[in-house]
Image (cartoon, rainbow, N blue to C red; front, side):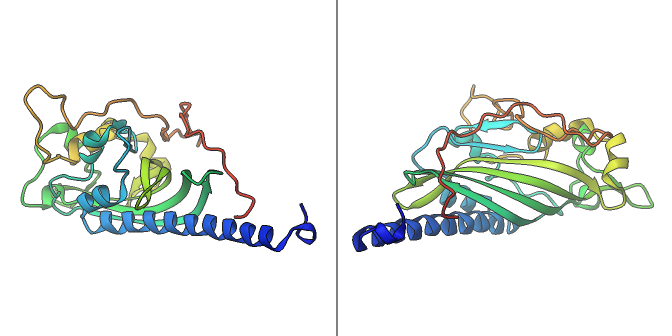
Length: 254
């Protein structure tokens, strides 16, 4: 229906709907920005407690090649963990693309990120002892001490659900497009890519959430990684079909 044929009440209702949907997208974009600030400040517990769904038990967290952490308790292990000496986590969010469902109850957003991460490794007070962990330390000093200083580009995909107190994270998925140490480009690094990358969460992030005797190891993923860049030298990603949230979206007003 053209605006010329719409009544005043219909035009007001349409404008109110457009404003509500734009407010939804603004709130979602701010939500993800707050999540990023919390992670940079090593306040992961606040990120999960304040920003994740409080009503859905099927929340998920997936970071890189570490697999899918399913359920509120398992997903929280990524956020509530012991600090790593020399840990730096700085990611800049770019190019947000946010789609809100027609009924405004769910949404999906995609961002690209540019980030820098570090781990003191041998330069810290508690050098890592396990061989798997040491595989993650990709730089070295002149005297052979190992540490991590890497930069990476990634893609962030998040499903959201609207609850009584606003929009919340439902499914959080960050997958890397490439990662490499500062002293090596990503093509050369792909030749020596460490096999332990898929264990990054298991090895670096030691949860301090108490688990009862007999419960599964909290640092093991529940499902295999859904999509991950495999660092192939032909520059083609090896993709696994990824389940996506079925959301009937209306982007006509974006």
